[in-house]
Figure: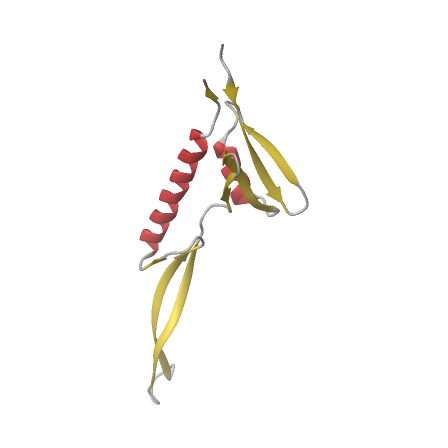
Length: 126
């Protein structure tokens, strides 16, 4: 006799929540499209084990931070003030990178890990 366990996910929006069954019809690509494009999306929760929830806040974005380190004044130059800056890139989930390429690579790697995790939660037949 085969018994199957279907996990339930909860998509939270600003005004309501929606239950999703993680069975063979579940599409992680559709979920990530909702995370990226829906302005009302807040989070997605999955009950991994009874009482233990895993929460996705959305895909990671890369933000550019510019910090002014020093200023040089030269009266006869145009413009008179020149700023020395330090540029870092921060992922929305935390973590700093020194180059944009490394930050984008890290964000893509995290999205790949999240998709692999979600695909592993589908129906398990005992």
